[in-house]
Image (cartoon, rainbow, N blue to C red; front, side, top):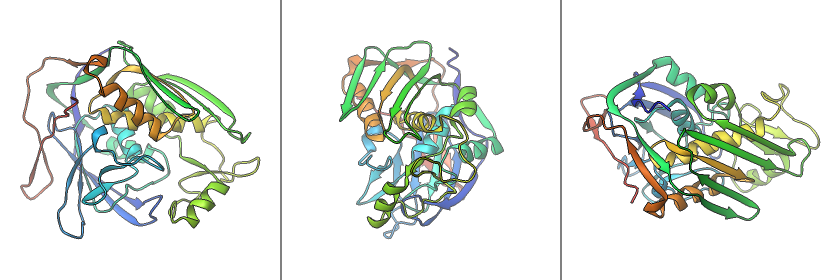
Length: 315
């Protein structure tokens, strides 16, 4: 496996849309950042004008029930981060500042493709500092209900082995294995959309959630059929989207993972749980540093404003 150098996006790029749960419009501005900055959210538009900075790391996750949330709900948090983080991780983006003026990322088409397209529109820029990897040294496991997830050593790269099983025959049992690289991510994962069952969505609406969900951003499953007139993008789009989510959730390690994740009937809670289990004991992992020279990092967001870099603290 080629370890390579840290990467960021080639230039600022913006996206707009609505939050799938809030139904509210949101504007997103992605900024390049220097080496060792990591992925950091800048939450603007707070009532008190505080504009907090939020690291995309597992210790910053307060909730994973319906989506993955980072930050402090009382002082500033950002929800539904998994698709953007998945695109960054899948394409090998190590450093970026994500400026957002609302509490939830836009759902766009329900996949990571729009984020991939945004990165492609400005390109990827590599620096002189080597990448750092989180190498799994021994197996760790987490279980929630019928769901299980395991991270195992794999020095060759990052691999996913994901299985789902639903009683609804439209989904049924699906399994997929993939060595995740930028090429395989683009080809096999990025376009897979989020999905939901009509009965569940109606319950969420009544509870005040999924207010932005529609056939434009969600694969809707009814009794025995797909409601979306265009159908599926892949015959196994459901398990592919679970893989998309896993790539995003596991990127909360703060650096790329050298290891294999095996998941059965999983989701955001289980993805984050097995990652926290890995990080709970320093004997579970090693940090592989390519040994290139270090740089102090910052992200420029215009007007001469520089945001300090954050290096992940895994201990």
